[in-house]
Image (tube, rainbow, N blue to C red; front, side):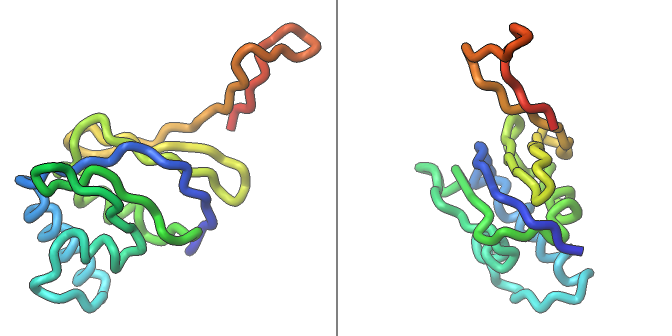
Length: 136
């Protein structure tokens, strides 16, 4: 099932030394789902096949930033699990869903967790005197 989202950014890093293992894990996942992926496709190409574009490589050739090049999430919740052990701890990706829900996926070096977000307008107060915030 597809879910429409706006990708809101984040910080996503995979070090060069982990890119081969991450590619192997993603390739295995894709084949298990019946997707036709080439044996020699590297991680950047595999991510591109999944509508994620690597926008920046670091000086060593690792992934320094990527973004969703679509407005639909498909099976990312599954395949991010298989590459999560190779993602640099502290990486995160932020989304806003078609229903207004805001969340991030936070990577800890083993897996990732989902966290609901809040929009805060610093310095602005509502009539009740509370800081203006939208909790999702």
